Length: 87
Figure 1 (cartoon, one colour):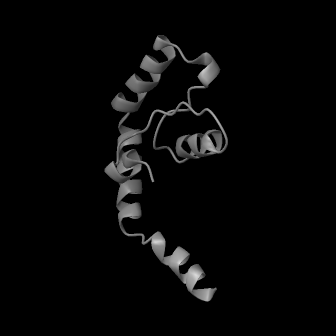
Figure 2 (cartoon, rainbow, N blue to C red; figure 1 turned 180 degrees about the vertical axis):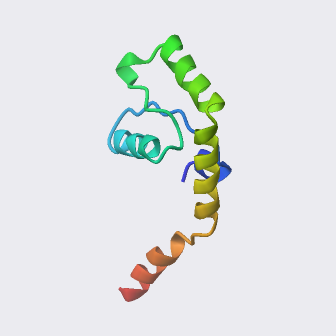
């Protein structure tokens, strides 16, 4: 899990490949950060606008902190270990 989620910091995402667009959209839908910056539209201006939005919008910070608190209570390895034990 990326450090920004554990730290409760609103992420600015620039998804490139595979599942990154999905997870970047999920973060924005959960309200923890701004909409993803499409790589093909990436410029200094678009990145700066996304960063400014991420650091100035209080709702992103509050949602990111709430997500971090929730993640801190989860034992993500437990289901994996349980599945391996069944083999």
